[in-house]
Image 1: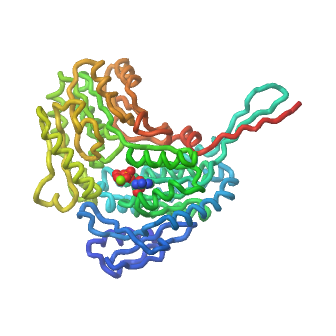
Image 2: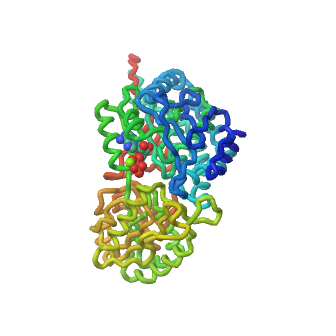
Image 3: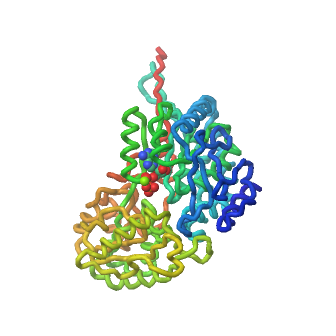
Length: 518
Ligand code: ADP
Ligand code: MG
């Protein structure tokens, strides 16, 4: 994989932006006016630029988005070309047997395993997510997504229905057609891999729009996939949401929409889907509750709460356990341990192996998060036990760094306790009665994830069953594992992905065939 080597060399040398950067592997690139390389999209298996010639600059958030590359700015005409290509490819891809499609996924999984380090460096460079705790595990974990769906490909089967000796009734799981996939920047490769693996294993073809803030690692993954897939089965576009994303959502040949991103944009995707009656899956925002019982005042739980809050991704995760309900009796001692643990996190350069926490993605998010911190600090009774507004000078001002921030003595109706901050800001609400804490946990328009920390398993499961969220973890704070369905209640989304059932429900359509045997 020579090409992989050159893409990472390119990015490692972004700071000097030399005009003699080696070309990206297998891809014709142009050195732009900004002296960075233009990395093309992938349409019909070919490196492709936007027809109108526009580009978008991709920056490194750890250096206030200093340019590292450019990508094409796809417009409606480019989306149309990609969708037409995917539509054409669908006619033959749908006839490839599921097991053969699965075999291709397994080959992609092996290739992703072999090339994960290059992809990890790309993720860290374009997102600001630290390499060791975040970007590398994301890149490594991605192979498992392809492997899982490759492994279950043979399970794309229907049923026979016993309606009597004179009738043979059976169902088939058929692919839907061209899928329009839209992904965000926070775990771009993992989320992109999910859309690719689920859509394509099920026999659909895909036009995937990467997030404008983080397209490079996704393009690299697309190149890897395209070495094994027939041309046109996977197409990866880069462009702005309101241009390329919106055009994809309304394209008449797109037969299924799968979106991961903000609740606000999710609504507009659902509107677009409604206009054409196409199925849609939405993975949206969250404000996930974390309920800690009095029997769980220990270091393991503290570590779990830190992991659940996704501090190593600067809290930029839909499943972040960002509302911490601490029982009053352990409030002080738990917070003391939590603060001590968070103080050990090293915030800084995402490419430094010893960094625990990198930079936020861009200035817009930085300003938003600062605004929330200011708002939280201004509430009467608020106690800031750690962090606060970001440093005004020193090395952390080179990027969009915000340090871990913990605000306690909050009530559940504060803005910081209701709205998704998407930053390293943990809001703590003390509780004393079980009924009260479940009511507060459920008093949210979101319902994506939840965390229950309790040694008494009866109590823990009672709480798990009463909390209105699509995914509850009991005494665990880590991420999703391919195989269990994942998706939200309430305004956190609709549809389930990540599992065989999710693939069957969201990426196939059931056809019934009734045969008269009389
Ligand atoms: P954020 O604002 O945090 O980036 P978004 O939900 O806006 O979250 O973005 C998630 C994805 O949705 C990105 O790929 C983005 O380009 C895309 N997107 C944004 N706006 C639209 C839109 N109006 N239509 C379709 N896609 C969009
Ligand atoms: Mg947006």
